Image 1 (cartoon, helix red, strand yellow):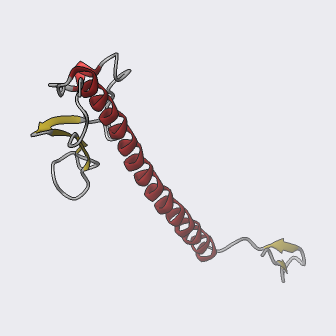
Image 2 (image 1 turned 60 degrees about the vertical axis):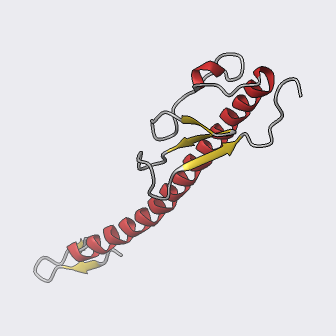
Amino acid sequence: MFAVQKNRKTGRTAARGMTLIEIMVVLVILGLIAGAIGFNVFKQLQSAQAKSAQLDLKAISNGVDLYHVETGQWPDSLTQLQPKYLKEVHKDPWGSDYLYVRTGDGYDVYSYGPDKAQGGGDDITVHGGEGTPTAGK
């Protein structure tokens, strides 16, 4: 990369450095590599957050089902599940609260997902309750 050139007037050899174009090409290549790696890491992060939310919702659903089996009723809110059926109800990976709503013979527990708004195709929902045995039956 470094070329040794002889100076015509003095007869000394001088090391030739990299040109600005060569430095810019190296920086562009490094930028492309970093961008590709960052894109893949970001996709994996999004996937991990969605899986984490799904697992949390299944745990909450299990707590709701246990509450229903023992009491014969659906809880009015997730706070009724603490501490006996759920150790704690924390926030989803995007910093919002998990939501619970009773629906007819069942319930839904859900997260609005990364956009933090209902709809949009990124909501994560677990539906439960139908066919769950009640206490005393």
